[in-house]
Image (cartoon, rainbow, N blue to C red; front, top):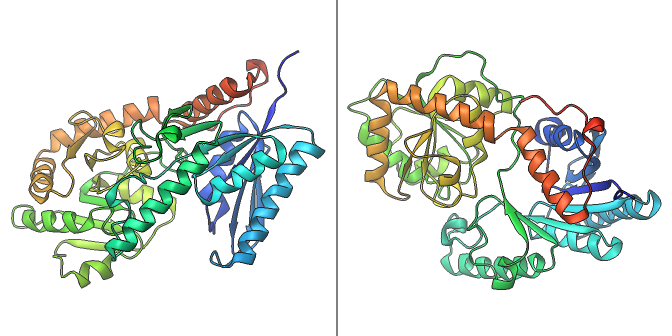
Length: 389
């Protein structure tokens, strides 16, 4: 008798304000292969369904409110119990990280017997992961507590999904030894498709927070290039970028500060630019790197964390040593001064994205994990059409 089809219960961090733009593509992708739902929280309750895979938002307006936290945990548990004991489905619980959502994942496992997959999306063993916290002692204590609690959760997970092979460095040895795999996080491939926009002499950054993303290093290196490349601009997209730049008296000539943008607007800005840069001190993957690759734009990234696994140096992008103004300046000069290089890197990035970073590849990798854990796989004759990429 074939194994019973599983029901996936996925807990994503919040608050989430726009379900469609934030999680709609997740539901469409998972719904192409699985039954299940995604749970998150935000200011108001909401629900959407795509390809039969639901996204549900619980009303929890203040994430510091303990009563709200308890209500959210109880709500997720009720949904898990409903799927497992009332619908009699084999339950697979997927948590976004080994902290809040990971603790919920463990509770679901204990109450329902669910198979527990824990994702890790940050590089919590890095000293620079919390560099934006001003107090070094608080930063060190926060890192210790995160690694201690995260290790406790991970060693109880049935499977761990990471973004690059060395991502669990710093966690307890037995947590690092859990069965695991690594591959990219899903991106909204439908939104980040080329529209035929011509690249202008502009480099784009998108992200937050300020120091962890290396914006201080970027602005210093950028200032050194201004005399030789005055026609170029640098667009910085995200929360809390302009204010810390001004406070640190960093140079901003030729810099345009852009508020956080909806995905479609960000896609247009990236495509209409020569390339994208991510000079991070600590980085798990950098989703924007994959989005830029889908748009056929070259990526410039620091040689930290998962970035070297998603940029092939001098093939589909350029890498440089982190926290090194000289190295970044040299890369910027080479990039801005060579149009043929930019064209070559962008074409290779697009080709790689269409092969390796698609919705189809993402759900195929997750399907392999589910098959290894449960023995179940969907019959090919019963498989719905995957989202376009």
